[in-house]
Length: 197
Image (cartoon, rainbow, N blue to C red; front, top):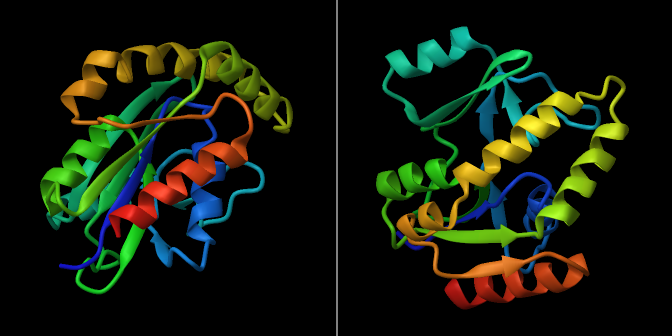
């Protein structure tokens, strides 16, 4: 296999989605976006097949039964359970192309174990907690029906999900800070990807 899957991770509101979009559109990198599935409702501005494949629990059960779910996780939100999962649905062809994906430490580890550590490389984005919380609130204010309880739940859950111990256990050796100018962080990640291809 010649391709690589660069997997963006970080706590909520670290800028991962924006960085993902910029790098996915960078023609010089030629990275194909990895689109995962979710059962959560679509947010304003999202498009099915771009950020996620929006689906339901019935489709998840079908993919599970077919043995095509690489990894999955469920979050018990104030609105009920929301599933996120990656399926071996034919979109990943590491023989011929490289990809950029986005997810959690847990999903990174399972995808890395599935495809191999030499092909799945971590890109961990880190932002100071105060900046992150302000960004999360600002994003939520733009929603038609803001859900501040969910913002708080995610903020607290991220502290545990992305603890320094779990980051080390996942084999993430390099961290890309995003505390100020976003362009600087994107530039650092872009250089890392070019060096790794």
